[in-house]
Amino acid sequence: MFLIVIGCVAGIGAFNMDTSVSSGLGRIHNLGLMDDRRNRLMIAGLLTIVGVIFFVTDKGISQNAGPSVLPSGPDQTPRKFPTDRRLDSDEYQLYLVKTYAIEKNNTLEKYVVNGKLFASVDDALRHAHALDVAAEELVSSARKERQAPIERQHVAVQAARVEKLSPTATAVAVEQNSSEPIAQVPTSLETWIARRKSGEPLAPVLKDLQNALDRGEVTSGQFAVVRQQLLLL
Image (tube, rainbow, N blue to C red; front, side, top):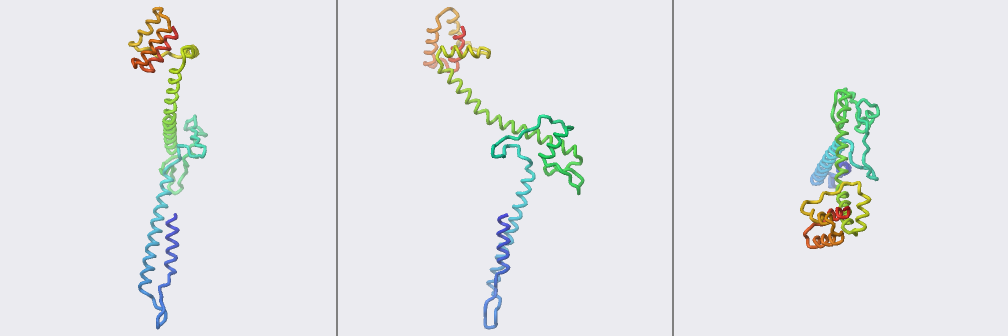
């Protein structure tokens, strides 16, 4: 639009350009000034044509883009999708008509959805329904991608907290979450469980387990699982 305005202004200025000069016979047209006016007119016309092309192209892209499925408001609130997707539902039909701007072209006697023509309103509604289902899947996928790093960070924080808990605090936490399934202890670490089941006191077993962690013989995750099992015995 800006190029169109510049082209129009330059064209008007070129048309009003005076190409005559004074002489002994009166005012006569100067060939150099006439060439300048012609060049200005050509540049103004070129700017106007380019501006029109950009304007039409941008308008076509915006019309074919369809409704946005991602947050667009200042509060970044995701679109709310209807739970009842029955095509015979009046409420859902009105939702599709409003969301996807379904309208009838009286000249072609067809229905238009996102630049596509359909012979009947039922076909147009089915197409809009397919677009809406795809849009909901896209929003759900984007939401999961945003939440995945947060969930991984939460798990890491919880693991770090477990490692820092004292034996007493760990016992309390295990007792509070006794309804949750307990992680399986690897076969290579069952020797610690066997020592405790044989009647050996808990303190030396935990101390040896801590020493094994310090030496790198067990990982922090294995340490947390085995200690949890030991505290439950």
